Image 1: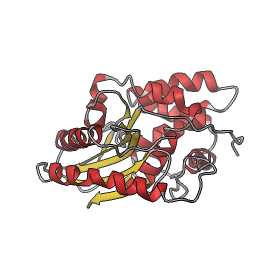
Image 2: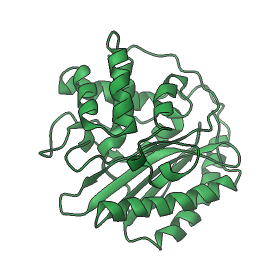
Image 3: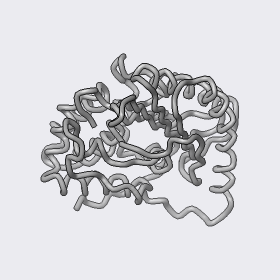
Length: 284
């Protein structure tokens, strides 16, 4: 079991964008605090719902099956839209994996090097080393799953078995957009994740699509081929709003990688513009 960590809630304006895919060859509870039981959470959720019309308008212009989940940072329930809502995590799971691995002494320094490569360039070999550093597959899955739970996602079960030949076990974790938005909303308020978030602000050029194409974004991107053809690209992150920030999870399933990522870029542009002009964000 990972040692319990004390988490301080601080304000966040960084955008964390995590895209669940990887390369074609492979790949891939935060403490809620003592918030008073008032109506702020539901009010925040109602506010971020104002982003849905922008998403729906942009969705009509892309050639992809798409989905969205959005939540105010720090509190509130995710609001969802679109027909795609859950599927393989692909490389988005590298974020909790990196957090789990870099917290384990005495291997933290080596893990940080691999985490930078796994997140910044979606390096699958680096991600595999992070996974192996956590122990046998079932232990590695549990360690990664605990990071999810510490950041508000108690529903997702990290896959420990290779369920699809040629791809990592962890990358085939079934991760819903709703759960990703919860994770992102809590991650933005975790000061111990600052190094990981910093890495995601300096992505390799090939990773800068979708939400990662927006200014001021910390992002993780990736993709994977569908079992019946086509490609899935998915992302999650924290988008600055006129006031505060919002956690966003997006996905697009299309005929090709280029179509899927182009769809995400179109959706992200619409969401970023709507968020920048609306006082709908949350804070830590």
